[in-house]
Image 1 (cartoon, rainbow, N blue to C red):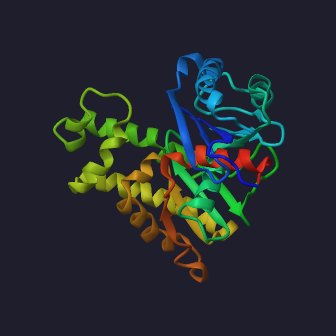
Image 2 (cartoon, helix red, strand yellow):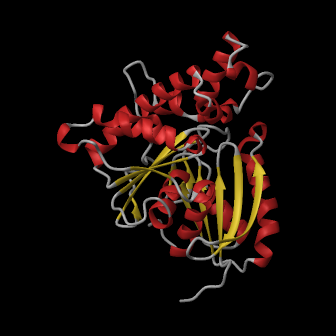
Amino acid sequence: MAHSAANYIGIEIGGTKLQIVAGDSRGHIARRWRAIVDLNRGGPGICDQLLQGLGEIMPAAHARGIGVGFGGPVDWKTGRIAVSHQVEGWEDFELGKWLSEHARLPVRIENDSNLAALAEATRGAGAGFDPVFYFNMGSGVGGGIVINGRVYHGAPPGEAEFGHVRLDRSGATVESRCSGWAIDRRIRAIASANPASFFGRAAAGINGGEARHFAAALAKDDPDARQILAELSGDLAFALSHVIHLLHPAVIVMGGGLSLVGEPLRKAIADALPTHVMEVFAPGPPLRLAEVGEDAVPVGALLLAATGESC
């Protein structure tokens, strides 16, 4: 059945940003509304923001359904939020029911990394591969698995929680060491200890978002940046080796804000992978940079809304 250019609504609810888009069944975005999440207002404040954004997007959309990518564990069958690891006030909230009542449309809820994985597997760097494992490094770290074009779900509310994979017995996780916030902390520590360093100059007077200077520091061959890269890529290669041994994906796709560091980070992880992978599986599947980019979650949300099921 042919659909017009904006028959569906896609929503991204993250730890820092909120996006609402109108688009078609193939994930092409026609209109967009954005806002910054107010952490102080928690879940109820985001609900107010959602109503504001929907009020601006929906009148011209003639929408048939809504898909939502939420930044945390959800029960995809019921639309109930289990918890957010970044924003307070979401625990056990029936987001799907609440949104459906306000929008008067069918609503499907998914973990945001699952929808990003679906978008990359369908329209991005994972297209033509099966299975696809996707992970993103933003405020937190998440993952998603797509098999035969469908998101793989474990027993609810569990998903591919790559960010919570342990890196050692002390409790360090991929998220605690490899998220954007983790890199922010490391750069702040370097800047504090050595104000004359590249990071000391670049990050002077800021408290948050320091990781945006990481790529520039690498381009200048800064020794502190090289050390962060070595440790970051080593941790990620070690964690991804577990994914390879358990799931044997045909491709691994890396997205999120930190992936914008680009080829230096991709290559460093790929070079470190064989060290941690069984010889028979070495060098491991190709590691590719995400292509859909920051639109991965809203594009996946449109695809979800269009299918009317959780894939």
